[in-house]
Length: 127
Image 1 (cartoon, rainbow, N blue to C red):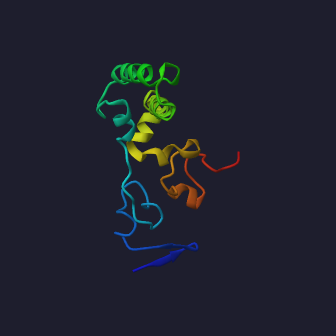
Image 2: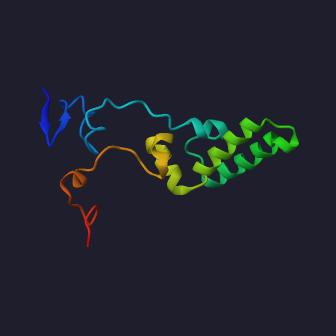
């Protein structure tokens, strides 16, 4: 059963992807998110430490660097993986939301209820 609230259509509970953490993308079914691809590029486990990721990056970068006869596109993939996994905050976002979570410099997980009603610890308020 769907209902309307403030002009936004909402589906039933399952269509919203459950409720924990929000409204599941405003009624859109959740899609599977790849949160392992960057780890595979560097050849490390998702549980790898920062030091292990750094070591793998350096090893892969040496092998695939275009100046040493490596493939430019592969080298760019390796650099992209390092940019994300070598940064604690970006890695955490990637682990939760995949590359979509990193687009435009922020996480795209749907609307926060405090945004809808205009309250929530100073967010969206003019002082």
